[in-house]
Amino acid sequence: MVKIEDYVSKACDFLIRDQNEDGSWSMKQEKIKEPPAPYQNSLILTSQALQALIFSAKKEYVDSINRAINFCLNSELGQEQSIDLWAWKLGAIRFSETSKAIRLKKEILKLIEEKQENSGCWPYYPHTFTLTNYSICAALPNETSEETVSKAVKWFKNAKKGKGWSKDDKDSKIEPSFTANSILSLIRLGEQPPKEAIEYLEAEQEDNGGWRVLSDSGEWENVTSYSTALCVSALILANGSKEKIQKGVDYLLKCQDENGRILRNPNEKETYHYLFYYVIQALELYSKNTDLRKFEEESKQQFLFSCYRNVLNSRALGVTEQSRIRRKDILKALEEGDKEIAQIIDFLKKDSRYDHLNKKSHITQIKSDVEYLRSIKLIGKIRNRYYISVSLF
Image 1: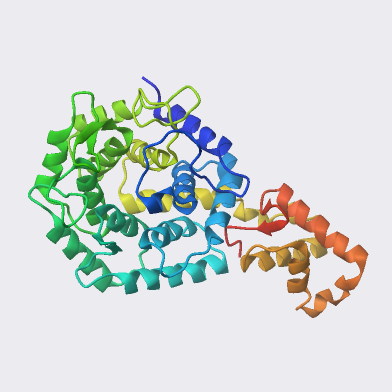
Image 2 (image 1 turned 90 degrees about the vertical axis):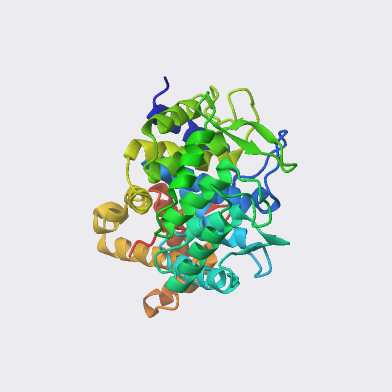
C-alpha cells in the first residue's frame, strides 16, 4: 500500500507543476464533470489548492503558496457575487497576516454575517445549498459572532431530513457527501453531530471502501474520491468507526496516477483540482489524529515557520545595519499590498530618511534590495509587481 506521506508529496508536486504564472489554478481543457458554477471559478480552485499545500506545508511549497495567496488577495469581487466566492477568498487569505489581509478578513466576515438569512443559512439562488453553507462554515474565523454561529447551527439542525442531509432544504433525498458536509460544519460550529448521521455514513460505505454521490438528476453515480474524502474526514472528527475510516483511506490511496494527480476514481484520468483539497485534508487528518481547529492552526503555524520569519532577526537581510533597515522598510511597503518598484519608492519617500531617492543610483539600489529579498524568498514577483503574504513584523 502507498504511504500517505509519499502520496501527499506527489500530489503537492503535481499541484505546483500545474499552477499558473499568476499564482492561480484554473479549469483546463480536459473533459470534466462540472461542479456548481461558482466552484469553477479560479478564485475557489486556487483557495482549495493552496490550502491543500498548507495542510502538509513544507518550505519547498512556500513560493507557490505565497503566489496563490497573493492571487486571492487581489481577486476583485462585487458584493452581488456569490457568497461562496467570498467564503473561499476568506479561507485563502486567513493564512496571510499582512495589514491588507487583516483588513480584508474583517470586511469579508462582516459581509458574510450581513448576508446570513434569518433562517441561519446563506443564499444560493433560488434557495440555499448545503455546499454553500459548508463552504462558509469552513472559512469562519474564531471572531465570528455568537449570533451568526447559533443561527447557522439552527439551520443545519432544521435542514436535516431523517438520518442525514440532502443538497438543499427543498430536496428530500439524503446523500453521503452532503451529510458529511453538514457533520463537518456542525463540528466547526462547536456542535456535536447527531449519532444517527454518523451511523448513516457508516452504513452507506461501499464494499470498495468508498462512498457514492448523487447526480443532478437524482440518480446514484459511482464512488468518488470527493465523497469518500468528505466522509472519511467527517468520521475521523466525529469519532466514527475506525474500520470504516481505514477502508476509506485505503480507497483514497488508490485514486492517484503515476504523475501525482488525484483522480475521481481509479479508472478516470481527468484533472479535478478541487479533489486535492478534500483528499489531502482527509489523509492529513487521519495521519495527525487531531481535532479540526488544532489541525488548521498547526498547519498555519507550520506555513508561517516555513516563511522564515526569524530571518528578520538575523544578518540575512544584509551585512550592514543600513541595508537591513532599508530592506525592512521595503517589506513594510509591501504590507499594504503588491507594488511595482516605483510604488515602493513612493512609499519610502514618505519618510524623510529617503528624500535622496530621486537620484538614479539610489533607485538602482532599491531595485537591488528588492531582488535580494526575492532571492531569499521573503517576497515574490508576478510580472512587474512584488508582494508578500505573511506579516513579518
